[in-house]
Length: 392
Image (tube, rainbow, N blue to C red; front, side, top):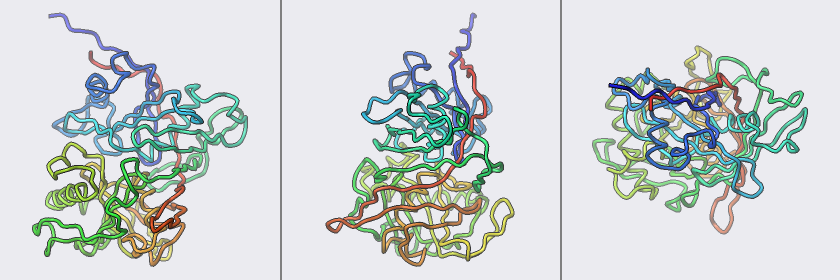
């Protein structure tokens, strides 16, 4: 029996922040995959190596974690005053599923560099030396992002001395700006409250209620108090990810939170929306040993945050969740600002790999809180470029 040959697709493998993904110019995809639908989803899953019941993605480009099972499609922007459109696909590891419901803030840092490398940004907008402000339309959430890319001798500068906890080697600093970061699906606080009592089954927590801030900023996120869950807030990945009961508990909380936020109608629908919302727990600042062995002192940070992504505790912090942290920290009365000891325009928080600083500009207008912009620093670089080979 004759077998079809593999096809080749131009692709670039990039790190952005603490994530990695396979990047594509929309025009380089096969014609049938240039439109949303099953052909595109099947192509991207096969490139990444999903679904893989072994959970390893051995026969693909994925790294078998939520941080490395990602795809990005970039094209010349169809929006006025934007350079490129950016579409993010989170690939499930062991299921045949691509989640298009949210953004990846970490890979956002790499989108600007990719766009310049691929000639998608007009040359008259690129300084020979200095900072190129790449204007990005995030198509998943219908929001504007500005990624400030350092340029040197007319080229993207990828090397530098900026260290990002969760990334081993230094690189050039990239400042990412999230403009009006309230998620495109509704109000920043979908319940109308900065804090709620989230009803959950009593099997999850005694009394069936958890204090929670439900926020749409960067990405829909549920912020809980660590102590109500029986945690210190200093936990590392193994403390959560090796506990199947804990993971199931967090998934139940996520499902009930998604209903409360109006993202789904019934908890059973959460399985089809794995990328959003995120669930995180916060606590007041205290010292701990990061996963790298570095000692983080309580005096260095404003609070502790641990977040789950695609059903597992993240090794550092998702970029979009960091935006949510910054927004919530800037607003009085949220679980985040309470843990930080009061609302602050900039916070330095502790995560499993170390610390991260994020800032947000928050104002109250007619009784409603608004965040005009959130910012954070990341780094990015091309790891490999060429063609990815895909079985037909």
